Length: 250
Image (cartoon, rainbow, N blue to C red; front, top):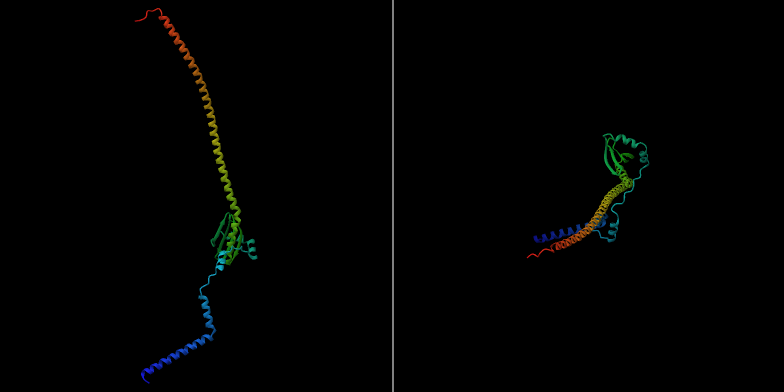
């Protein structure tokens, strides 16, 4: 066999080997369930999601966050709140080992979350005007945070009437002040009006007096003018009589 024939034979043998190996891999892949499952999972995770307008609209109509539900105290927590936790916290509040983590104020009501690191204990307090009302003691931080949020929500509800009363009281005081200012303004205007009327009456009397005096003076003037004309006529008559016997001047 020459060199070219040998090379061609080797290529055919190698190609046949590759075909056999590929066929074995295909058979193994068909008989083994696990690779198929993994491929199916991969195809499911990589497939692009199909848009569903109805589902999208329903999802958009759902609120982003449901309203928080009130925390229900356990029997032990309810018993703690009524049997000594208030006095215990009042004694500890003046020390330096108790840390105030959170506090919420609404009107005169407030809620505080306090931590006693020495015993890894949390105290949750609801108070009014600095006086503790309810105190819950727990070693569960998550439970303490939940109770604190519930107490803070209660302060909003409890202070609603108080805040409304404060607002109404301020509005009432403002209205009363505006009424007082308006009444004072009205009183001053009434005083000005009274003065103006009095002055108008004085002016009217003066005007009447002046008119009466002017009328009297007019009458007196006319009488004086009549007397003057009479006197002037008398003077002319007397002058003519006096000059009647004298020679005429040249």
